[in-house]
Image 1: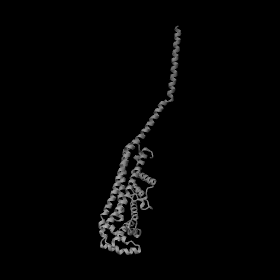
Image 2: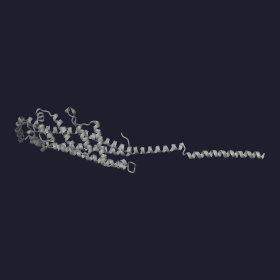
Image 3: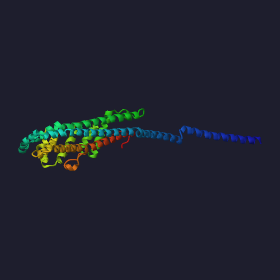
Image 4: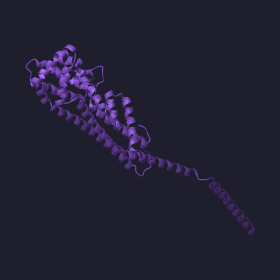
Length: 356
């Protein structure tokens, strides 16, 4: 009996030992083969979360810090554009102050005799001595073509300087916002490099939209901080179109004839147009009772017309052979639009690494 119980106990112990060996072998093989599939999944998920966190961080930085800096620069640029227009308007107000002295001069006996003495030669030989005579008095009392062009150029130059300052401020704000973050593409960029990127973008935009020639010239010059030619082109665009709208037989013939070449050079040509208009007005009245107020009234209207053309542009129907001149108000607005778009695209590409 005891021997049978001892045999059963021996068998049970042997079974337990066998099971223990099996489980031990399984555990050894499992540990040797590496992490289980669930552990691999956990590691992959952590990497995805890290990548999403960096993208979210970049997007948050762009939305919260960069976009407000771009918006602030845009508002500053538009305020500078308004100041530019105000300066030009103030220039025309200054011209108007010389109208009364001019009218008194050209309606005096000496000036009337000067016109009468020159008229026969102009009619006989197609010369323009009357316009030269009148332009001298215009330059003395009211303005010269060079003065108008220089006033426009000076105002645009100050606008360019304002744009440069605003760009510097914006880039400093963006760099400050990204300080200590892994954005070397922004921390290492200098203002000259960034400005060149902006200029390239603005040129691309102008090409895409087929912008009017004069307007495109102004926009690119303003963006590039290099100017000088745009103001002259603006002035000539205004004068050519004003001459096309001149009324009155004598005025029209004066402009179409030799009068548009009064002084050497394109700016001289412009003042020749104005002098021709005024000379025609005087010739129409010089042989009769001439009212000094008529000269003042007509010249003030002409100055208003030039100012309106400079600021608000000239409709295309004025001269179907030429592009419409859109006016500085719209051109400066377009300049601000293009600069804002360029800033946004360049910085968005740098921070989010995507193209809009």
